Length: 385
Image (tube, rainbow, N blue to C red; front, side, top):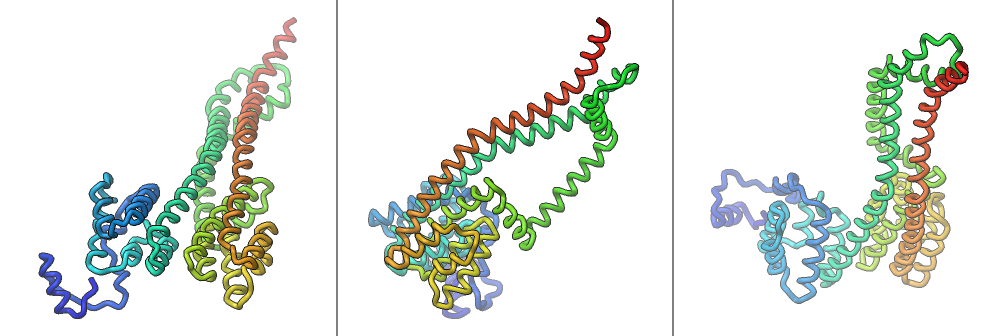
């Protein structure tokens, strides 16, 4: 807690019903967050609802303590109720609302806290919270669209791979015994499938173990900053996937940067916070270069983006227009809207073309295996005529 001296802290603790055993002074009180803060499991959507509810109550003229108490009493989730109760107690004891949120970094990231602090300084906390709620809802909607578009193709591809592996490993070796007593040579499709099936039947355990090791090594490599940077750089160069990933990050970054600029946060800090929302490490590293080599040296944001090859010329041109006209936030929202439309078209293309293509691909593989197994039977039937 914040107190003038140890004796004052002891007095406050005794008034709260606690018996202090040891009281020490620390330089960074924010490092001593409540223990339950790290164990709270609350969905991001519930934080968004909390943000919108608090914004609505503050906009209606309800004091922040009364608003927090109202939301706490109406919360159904016990963890959320405990979280809001802790924030309410800290604000009641004199701590700033933004400082109370900072003690829960997993639930309220740095971007959220900085926006709330800017709203407190400007006396427009309700407006800032409403913008935060809208931004989080847009981000959740974007993430839902992306996951929805990729979930079914990934499921089809995974199930197809497992089905082919099971057929080649466990079913075809039993059928191959039927062809061992044939006096004539087998067709090449049958010989090829039988060779692959025989290899899988003998070494399937090693193949599964080797595949697991490859996946584990890939995950460990991907978790490292250097590995993530290499993989993300390669993903951006892929024909369709690269554009899809880039457009998704541009929409998220443009909306976040517009929100920060409109809240009055300095451009350098806004670029840093906005860059942290980029999921692609290659784009995030480029944004750090923009902050370090251009903005801090007095150059324009558009000039820094122009030096990054990954950013489209349309974005840099629009940012330059926004900087010259003093309407950077409005221009960034236009950029986000443009790439949102591009992303929606890309998602529609993926859902309409990729799914049938994958189904056709899996069907061709399974059909080839069936054809290879039936071809010797057809030859035997023709020989009996």
